[in-house]
Image (tube, rainbow, N blue to C red; front, top):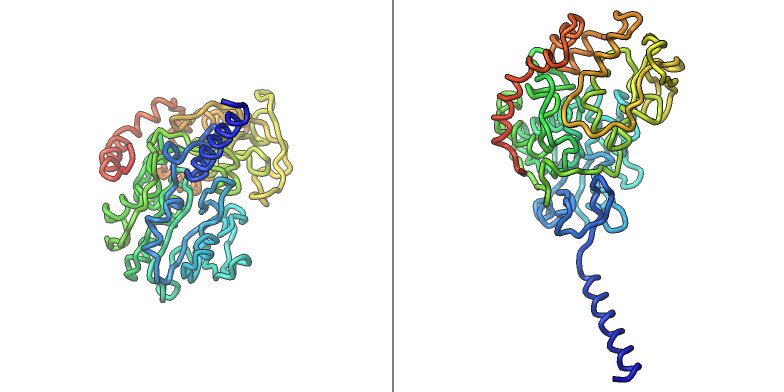
Length: 408
């Protein structure tokens, strides 16, 4: 065989291989190691499974509950779900925006206003502030609601409260709701104090543990079937599930799920450092290491070799201890947690120069869901003694949870 023939055959083989590869669907998999993998082995979020839900939206007037995490992943990045649906000529009538807003720019706790999305021209209805639940008038003319928000699996993270109130409004107004499922980066364990019914609020509307180990789709099933909606109404609910996901899957969220959860470490530490939300201790807000450090000016400066000064920044216009030198601990290099830790909250309490400055009792109780934890810490109980008091409720919840799991 001549050199020319070998060259031609080789070129033909390469061309065929290249053509074959181009025909295979590829997408970026946002795992902990950020590597790109084939669709067959990748976690595929429900938003990417368009063939499963686009038929449900055909010839319908659609409302979408979404924020900056509501995206469809592509080989070269991602597009926003709403932008994609608009380009596909889906009849989107309005967008409902949760805490932090539709494009995710509002500060924690900041009022999110109604408005118009400058990119699409769609009306935006705020679901944060006085109006946390869609009204009958706001749902009027809608045939279906599409819900797609990335959760992080912590009870006081308000997007699951938004989910519950949207489901309730849909049930009361006979509007079907479709939930596009996404992985829970803290879905690999169940832990923490269980919400007591008398302390329920927008920071925790149901009697579940602090970390509940369910995807937002699984949790929607639980809300509906356990009759947790007002007057025990049930929504016409459809879950579009994930592909290639289990509760032990490591998952990297490529977009901040909220302004103060900038990376995987912060998201993983959030169940533990989020306990500082009901205290006067700063948990990194006002720095670039939110929920990866903690400190306060009233912690004993002689006991800590780490300090920082919180300043207003993106996501925190008025951080705790603003402008004050805070003494505490840097946890930005901490290994992955598989449990809720009380060690840092207890450390801050023990080493406060004025212990009366630690807890904001009403706020702390709403965050943790029980009035006993503050009392236990103040009484000097050990972490193991406190955690032992959680176990009965955790075991009871796990039995209920098992009925609604979609994934291993």
